[in-house]
Every structure is written in C-alpha cells, then in structure tokens.
Image 1 (cartoon, rainbow, N blue to C red):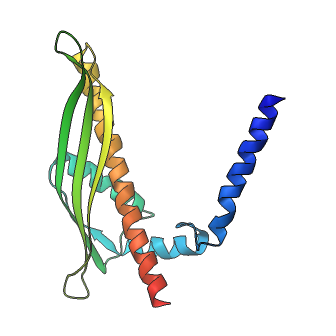
Image 2: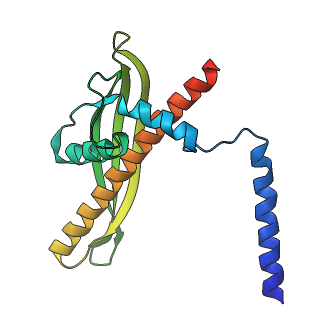
Image 3: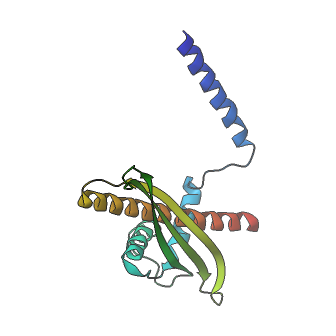
Length: 178
C-alpha cells in the first residue's frame, strides 16, 4: 500500500512539473514541420575537412547527421569549420602501488559557422567538450580498446552537440524574423 502511494505521488509531481511547460513557449526542436526546415538548412552546410584521424571520424558523424542521403547541396550557403580538437586523458582511481584503475578522457573542439553567400560572415562560434571515462585494465589491449570506444563515443556526442547548436541557432534566427 505504501508503494502505491509513493508511485501515485511521483506521478502527480511529474504531471505538476510538466503542466507549466506548455505556457512557457517550450516547443520540441525536432517536431515535424521544424524538422524539415532544420534538415534543409543542415543540408546547405559544407563541412570542411578536419585534421587527423579523430577529425575524420567526427566529420563522418557530422555527414551522417547533416545529410539525409550523404549528399550535400552542390552550392552550399554555409561552411562549418572545426578546429582545435584537443584530447586530454587524466588518470585517477590510484591504488596503493601508484597504478591507476580509471581514466577520464576530455575532448574539446571549437567550431565556426560561416555564411558563404555573405562574404564569409561568422554566424556562430562555439567551444564544446565531452567528458567520459574508462577503466584501466591489466590487459593493455583491453584498455586500448576501451579507450578507443570512449573516444568514438565522445566524438559522436560532439557531433550531436554541433548539430544541436546549429539547429538552435537557425531556429532562434527564424523566431526573430517572425
């Protein structure tokens, strides 16, 4: 009986917090009509090459999310420049024998969105980062695989953050025009 009361109270609290969202102007970024507009804008962005292997992986993730069929527009209106891709690995979880059992990977990037049809005017500049961690195991191979998996996951998160930032920029810009 006590569990039933707790669940009922939890549902009531959730509903209570969700009700004001309709009045604050909240609207999902990817609702149907806006999603088509956002997809059309993202297809108009040329993604410049990014240095090193991690940059290539990040660029591939961006291509997958920006272009619906991996085909950008032939005459893009915008250009996305990504630079200063930095990786920092910090060991922690130190044992008595001074060996680490866990590590934290921090990836940071800076990107610019330029308007190619308006004298390369800078529209958006952002610094983004992700923080993920992995276990340091007895096997060097297993640790390396774990570290690579965390790096790829972090790059995927960065690509999602970039797409979200650009989509929000254009959504806010469209809202200001109306």
